[in-house]
Image 1 (cartoon, rainbow, N blue to C red):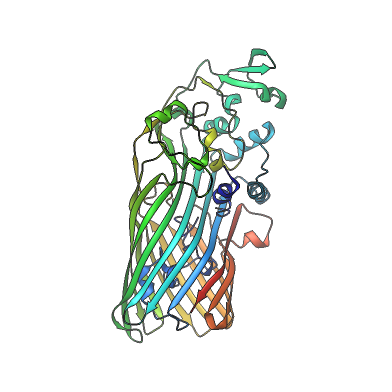
Image 2 (cartoon, rainbow, N blue to C red):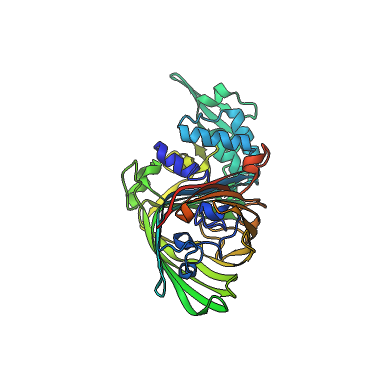
Length: 493
């Protein structure tokens, strides 16, 4: 996998986004307060509330153009910030060293019943035109990446230790031309582990039993969204109603969804060939998509839509409601279904990095931990959500707001696991500077304290800024969250 793809997978944060698992709409202008439903404007209203496109632009301009906006975060309740930073640095540089046995044992302990969440978004292009009495049109191209995992004890043991897992009684080792079988034991040395070519169990368990209580999900979508919003009736100075709609075409770059609960195992994957997974003989049963490098080839496509409405009362109080991301994606390339098999033996030495998303080639395939069969297609519902929010300016320097984001289906890949509630504030001490802060609970994360700083130049004709979904990212060495959002190419004219 090339360095660009590694960057997308781990720092496309890093972690995703209108992020399907965040409340801020992935724009640096919204991330710092954690609220977006009644704050997002122009093309940044896409995926948040398209009815906002009908508002009169604050800076009395018709056009807004933006490039290369980024937002992302990573959270683990088992890894410290230093571990997360090292992993990110290694992935960007492409010099990530494999975990040694001691580190794998530690990872097994850390990841048992512990969650790992990554989300990331890149807006490569955003454009909006807003015309009085006509309304606002906007177009946006976004890449959304999401990973969520929670592993049971035996699943973590298998995934990190592979053929030396405690699931296997006997180990086949090879030193030069000599092959022999030894008993597995907890004190296995690094040198011996390096020589293991296969682990074998005398009392094998079904994979569904090994993975019981575990869940791993990943999605990577590229979204092309065209939205429109306008005033329906009324006057802003008294009471006005706005409505909006967005339609989107979606390219699926990756989908991975494995879950085992109560002995029932389900698992499907569809990955761009850029992931470098070799499926062996199972590939003859699937519609193969070949290729590598950048840009990655899509393996699925689908459609979706957004609906939104808001009201403005006495030109100040805004109340908004939207239904976002309704639709589906049909995966037709490199589609594979997980088989529930007896774990009799395993050749794979397990994953080699804490970034599980980049290690799928060590999980799937002829020598991987999971056995698969090829499929012709698989359909997934988009991770939809409902949003409700309100905001109110307090004088010329402050605007406060609240947001609630509720998943409409929290079981599909890419969805948030729990509702999100946020409060936030914008503070504009001078016309060229906006400071943001907020408080967010829910989603795939514990509580967060977002912060942001935005610079406004030439009367609003240019904006740039940085933000984080959690202030801990910048101000302390503690905590298990890393988050960063930025944009330096946003123009109005």
